[in-house]
Length: 637
Image 1: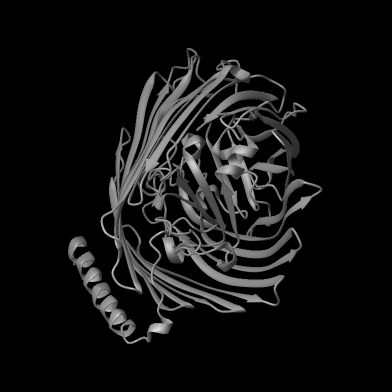
Image 2: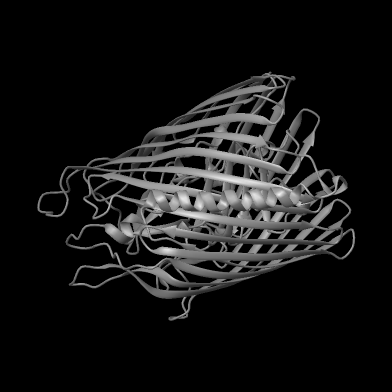
């Protein structure tokens, strides 16, 4: 059966099933029906793909609001995400360098990233370039820990990070300008307006820094003399958001995000190596309240990840690298049709389909340059007075590896008004990337078209306790990953990725949010044991212990705070090779709002000027930022 006809068949089957559900729903007595609220967010809450309060959500989720971002004075998206519970952070340097996060000890490409509901990542590398996403354009962040493939498909083994861009119906103007260490300059501006039926928001940001030399010393104390220039970064970004309620039951909305610039990085060249990048996402959504119990949403989106790499020649005599330019451009088109049915006040059923197509345009001649994925998914939610349930199932049909099914089951029990217990079990998978499958053979590496998807199963048990103004949350988790895709060195033969490893990851997370003597205190600690089952060794680039503490206080026009970020040792390579020491950082910040429109902010990150390293390459350290000071002035009307 052809790709198109198969998709039409799925659509027809779903339509018939929806009609059956609707017929059943029309027989439900009025007292059990619930009208859809037109003021619900357009983008569903990440944990269930539907709008729920945090109290109703069973999955462990961290909500980061714009107020939290402003208070922390974070410089980048990475700075915000690295302090979330269960998160390990890795980076090849400062601003604009290759970076990623690991959730609960899984791989950095085991995290699914969404921007306003649209999955965003490079089809060639299989992960998202989060270092290029502008924080100034983000209104809200949700970090869901644990598997979500039964709702979203591939990638969501460790969890899901969703970024929501700014949307506002109120007339508002804001702007800021700042300057800091390494000749770092930042300019932001935004405008929003609207009425009862229409809203429009726009934002721009410019970030430019000279940076510093990312490469440090090797294990013998030697400095890389081939590329010892500062590694700068510049980013120009914008967002547009608009919505219009055509009727009280029908709304049309859309958004556009573009981020582009240049990032310099260290290699072994005599001159600066750098890449030009463009990240672009646009989407249109139609929300239709068909009747009192049926809400339907149709979303069409397209995302781009474009990178042009420039590498200059090495000293005379080196035969492997010459002046070169390469590009890796990927495009992803997505159609998602989701239908939510309120069967009773306590019962919500979701049924949907999605179709995704990846397309690669590269200077590298991949053996395949496109693939499609079709999926159907369903979910049932029950909200009781003391008992909640979530059941979800999804079937993906992929052009490369065929059909893959995932499911999850979760429950929550309110023992009393102050104590809630949750438990869940779910499966997930990660599809191999184009690099893994189709990279053309060269002297060193080739793709492996026989790779299977990575598969996982995860268990979670949690307890949430509220005592006065303090919320305690503790979670134990256990994840098994099979068919782990690993680089296998076959020298002198050409090497490739293979399904050879199994990972066993268990751990414990504790979070505390409280108000003590007028101070807002947020703390979390994670203990993770990420092991390769075959060798018994710790998986590369994961620390076993992480702690984050933030303390903030507002006193009239003045606010101030401090954060502690600490992480234990890690290993740069498999089999516990190249040990990287643990570290602890102290950040401080303050803000003074001298009238209702103007605020001055200042911060110092890494106040104690701690030297620390998260990754190495060729034996050389990738240095993390030294002490960094930044001051800014903000206007809001």
